[in-house]
Image 1 (tube, one colour):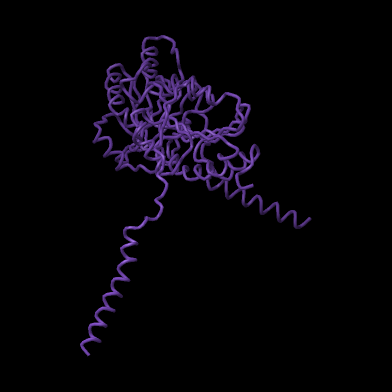
Image 2 (image 1 turned 90 degrees about the vertical axis):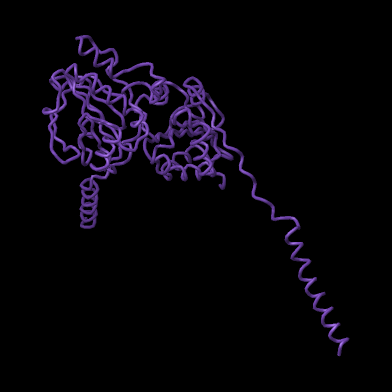
Length: 200
Length: 185
């Protein structure tokens, strides 16, 4: 009986250590919030270390959160499109915020990458991929569009192809245009395709 | 005395010649049988319909499908394990194909180059579609499209094992072993 108790205690200690260490099997990414769910305000540092809240950067007509990367060729194929999206919709009251959650890409790398590719929208660093986990983001690029009340309206890809010449459906722009004109979004979810976010 | 010097000189020449002949033979004789030239790696384009047919058809052997891309680090990292598994099982009991989600422009360059460096000989495809979403959804509605992704189908075309992210080779072997016997068994 005493042996069983010792074994059980040992098992609990091991289990506690594994859970406490935050070990997570690959592929186990938290589920994304459902369309219509409210995204809680959060605060993340920019590439200079200055903290910004979602609320402080949000657009009056909504906000696009873009998970992006420095080294991912798929994300990089979208650099110009992302910058143009930010410019086009800034005038319509929609803010674009980039988020880099890759553990291997530090603030300096993100800053240099933004300068090199002339990305002018704010880019935040997500240490410990907490926001990627909260939003269930798995790849780069991956987009979330929330309305002024932080209600999730669209989640998924920017468009159907990394090759700009082969774009057939601009899903994110379609969602933004529909929301801005008070129409229902035909396709509120579209699978994002890209490089897996390298989590801590 | 003079004669003996001549004899010594002749013997020396004969000795040199006897050493030189085999050396020449070594140079000009048949070379070591050259290593078998590796067959050029051909990566075939596949569209959504062809992929659907490939994975859903009834077959004689189970089918292992690995989705990957050259720009995907965990895909590259797991490839040596996949090549080993391919060598162990495919000759007798398992079909194994890889499907690259690289850009179509890489079909004759980056993709075969990487497969060659891995000595990968399983049939290789590249998904040639403008929109990858229908293909991703048909493979698994729950799959986001993140790479790598590995699926094992039984002979009836049913998914019996799937793994998103870098595969654990022992876990994959265990799943395959439930369906087939290894070559060396």
